Length: 398
Image 1 (cartoon, rainbow, N blue to C red):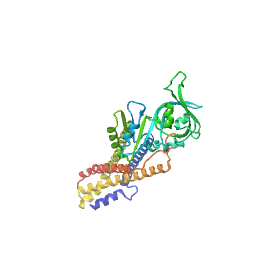
Image 2: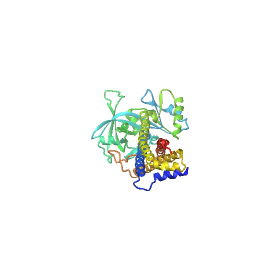
Image 3: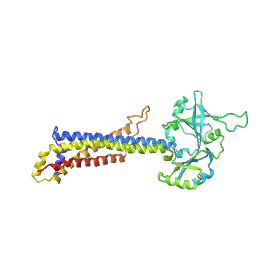
Image 4: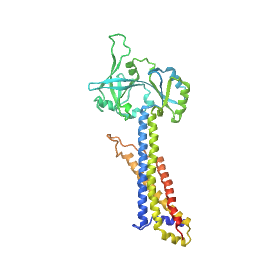
């Protein structure tokens, strides 16, 4: 059977530049190169965007979040003791959250205020999103805040002029007399500005936990949320199950995926659709190869008759054209993957293409799984195409 491989290679790598076989093979292979290259690049872009979204999720969603079903603020002391009994826990943070008004000399706005303790950055990776300035320091004698880039722009703070003050106001719900202040207010220096594409975070201001409690007139033991970080991501489900079994039914225990359920479902659905669509494109490219192989069989009928006269069987001929089809499919697939890998690498290294309206490079991830996915698609569908094409050899007689 070695002669079938030799002849298949001769057909595919024919030295005659304008040989009909060469032209047919080159055209079919080129289509496969483009299809497999596009498939890999699109998968890499999708992986990059998925990772880009996940980085924001890590910044604003904890591994596990615990909050009350019935109350905006709850006493955390007894609940925290139960949580700390779990060895899977790496860190925890306490937060309060409320809608407030903010204003400065330029403008005003309604925003989400989040009061955080010193452990916040051990659970949430928001420090990675700080564009200018620094994160909060609860030990500072100055009242500090960190605001979103959009809020800084809305209040005309300017990205590099973050030292101005912002007045935070909230209705005074504990008015004791007619002469009590209608609003609690506090002037905070803007210490840092963070950037986010998350719509909920575009109008968010972070304060030290004690400052937020003072504004809300809350006792020291009250919080809105408890954020938890586990030692290993594989331990999340086990810890959630343990917490749900040990704490009162009046509390929610949610993972990051459960808090952003719609987003994660959308990502999974889009990934399935993407693979199907790109697979269909590859199948169309393979049909082009089928046509090219059938034309090749017709073109090589004289050679087939000669080979049969010297002892080759129909099975030998089918194997010969199957191998030729496989050479064509694998060559196109591998060349396409190499080209796609170069494109993805250059984008990762140089960031030539930017996200619309920003200086942020379009995210792409070079993943071995994407290479394997495309290669398997090409191999499987290419094999099927080769089988279909060699069936035409059956009708050729001696």
